[in-house]
Image 1 (cartoon, rainbow, N blue to C red):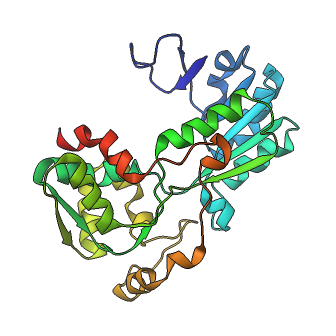
Image 2: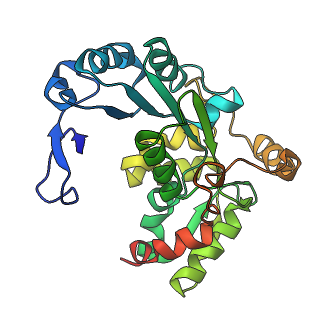
Length: 268
């Protein structure tokens, strides 16, 4: 087994995993990494997807599992994850698409810094919500698709098992930590300032997450009216959402479990 990374660090991978440096945006760096590989877990980089998949096929890869997005299932994503899916399908290789919805881990990237510093979350839409999915459920499905027969030609949309507002998610993190976390309601503009100041994932995704741009990257309206409409939509009307249980046979992990798994990361 090998893992591809742009910058290899000693001891970063588990025992038995060979770390290989390479960059999907620079396909010429992937030749050594693909040599002898039978199954590939592919991160979405639309610009080079066709070339990378072609290199994989030439190297002898026979199965590709794509880390895609639930936004493809919903029809929102047409130019980020979808082109990667199509490139793999067109290759003639065995393919499986893993389409997570909202990663629970996003909350560690967005809320972790203010929780660690001040035990506070500043959120513009506390009563909006979704079905955050535990990253281990995503990994479990990907591993099965990579290592077992019977998953070729499938697209697995993955969500968490519960509809949770942002307010309730904060409460569950607080319960896992055994500490109080204050929820402060701010405007989208103020939240954007906060995310940009945090840097990293929060800054890179601030405009999309806060409604300043749509999935295609076009300018959007984060006005209070828009937020009110989003919060007013009855998500329960969507009915049961697909989870990892359909693939793994085990109940999907809850956000409460995710919060317990990561409580120390919010304390540090």
